Length: 289
Ligand code: ATP
Ligand code: ZN
Image (cartoon, rainbow, N blue to C red; front, side):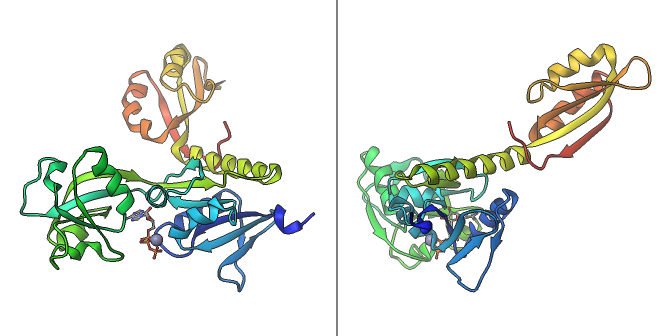
């Protein structure tokens, strides 16, 4: 058997906006990358896995043809390239939106604004689909690089590009008119994987999901009068149900549970109303459901 074939190859962006978060997520998932002298490939300690560092635009194609078994890429890039790959798991970083923008002094009502107008973009496929579905003819000018300056240069009437804060748009005299697509990073996998490699892909997804679950949740501990345990358990249902331990002081219990981080502040006043005291909220490192 060719040994090389049983090494799981995972592609991530070589250097760019997805790189740091991809490396962080892999680190938290127990994937320790041993950076060697080869800039494009690195081995992983203790796992039959190799990391390939690629341009993000190339990742969908590498994953489609199996040169990489899986990869981390933005949904925007994946949609634009259109390569048939499986989305294994949405990730919690790389959030941005693809929007249409127009000169800031113009008024915008609807996509009809763009009828027969020229739009500069490096995402021609996503844009074409958007206007085709609406039956609005537009002229799409495919350009690479700084799309934002094309309006002031007189190359286009509007642009279609990634917007994160809108400040780059403002600097170029533009404003966001319409969000066409919300994007985030995804883990994608090749559609034709052998059994062994598929098992490794499933294991990777499982690790990543455990890390993301943990980060979204908090371990909460509190003390409450024993007669309030039922009511408070309803407020904090936990993974299965809360853990309840008696305190040395008669008539009191300690209740432990897991809650989504975003629910803590909204729930706090209700917990206090029900008599909860000594509330502790603790981060979770890994959470396997
Ligand atoms: P290159 O191909 O030369 O590496 P790029 O413009 O494609 O350049 P980045 O700017 O690093 O690469 O963006 C990579 C991906 O990161 C984008 O395709 C998108 O999915 C995501 N992204 C873009 N802008 C942001 C942002 N402001 N915040 C978070 N994620 C973003
Ligand atoms: Zn790119």
